[in-house]
Image 1 (spheres, rainbow, N blue to C red):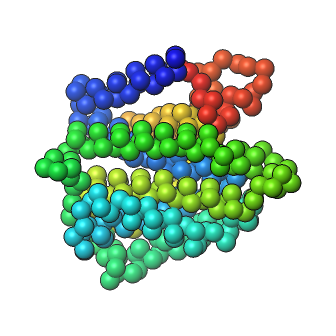
Image 2: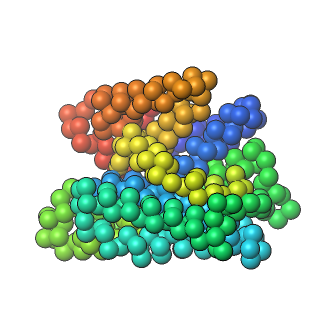
Amino acid sequence: MTPWLARAGALLALLLLPLVLPQYVLHVLVFILIYTLPVIGLGFLTGFTGRVSLAQGALFGVGAYTTALLTTRLGWSPLAALLPSIVVTVALALAIGGAVVRLAGLYFVMATIGIQQIVSITLMNWIDLTGGPQGVRSIPAVSIGAWELDSTRSFYFLALLFAVVSYVLARRVIASRLGLYLRALSDDALAADAVAVKVTRAKVTALALSAAWAGAGGFLYAHYVRYVHPDMFGLEPSVLFLVMSMFGGYRSLAGMILATAVLESATEYLRPFGEYRMIAYGVILLAGMMYFPKGILTLFQRKRREPAAEVALGAEGTA
C-alpha cells in the first residue's frame, strides 16, 4: 500500500499547490505538466526501440497548430479539437516517420531531423493555412460549461488532469501485452523476432504512441499560451524533450517526470544569470549524465544487486 499512499499524497499536494504558490511559480508548474506529455511519449519510442528522435518538438507543434486552426478558423470548441489534434499528429507521424523506423543509430537520428525541418518549413511557408511568420493568434481558452480556464490557476488543474491521465495510461500500456512485446523488443530485437514478436509493427506502434502523447501536449500548450508560431516548434524543443527523457531514464516514467520538473525549473530560475545561464544549465546536464547515467531517479533509490532493475519500466522506486 505504501506506493499507492505516496502517490495519493503527492496528488493531494499537487491539488493544494495553487492555494499557496505565487503566480510565477504556478506558471512554471503549468509548463512542467505540459512538457511531461511529450517527454513520456518520447520515452515509448526511445526507451523501447532504442531510436533517438529529434522530431518530438515538431509533433508537439502539429498538435498545437491543429487545435489552433480548428478553433480559430472553423469555430470548434477547444475540447472538441482535442481528439483531432491527437489523430492528425499520429497520422502525420506514421505517414512521414513510419518508413524510417527500420533505420537505426545515426541514420534514424538524421531522418528525424529531416522530419523536424519538413514540419518547421511547412509551418513557416504554408501561409494560407498556418499564417506563416504571423502564426495563429487569439486561440480561445478551454472552457468546461460556463467555467473558462483563462487564468494560470484554473489552467493548472486541466494540465494536472492531463498529466495524471497520461501517466496512468502509460502505465497501463506498459503492463499490457503490447508493453510486454515492446520490452522484449528493447531487450533484444533478434530474440523478440524469434519468438514471433512483429518487430516492425512494434516499432511503428511505439512511434504512434509517442506522437499521441506529443499531440495532446501540443493541444495544452496552444490553449495555455493562446498563440502559436513556427519558431516555437523548431529543433530546440525537440532537443529539450530528448534531454529530459534521457536525464530521467528512458524507461522510468517517474524519472522522466522528475527530470522534466528539474530541468524546466532550472531553465526558468537560471534566467537571472543572464548570458551565463546556459553554461550553468549545461553543467547541470553534464553532471546528470556523468553521475546518473540510468536516470535521475537512481539518486533516490537504494543500490541493488541488479542495477538493471532500477530503471526497468514500471519499477519507479520511492523517494
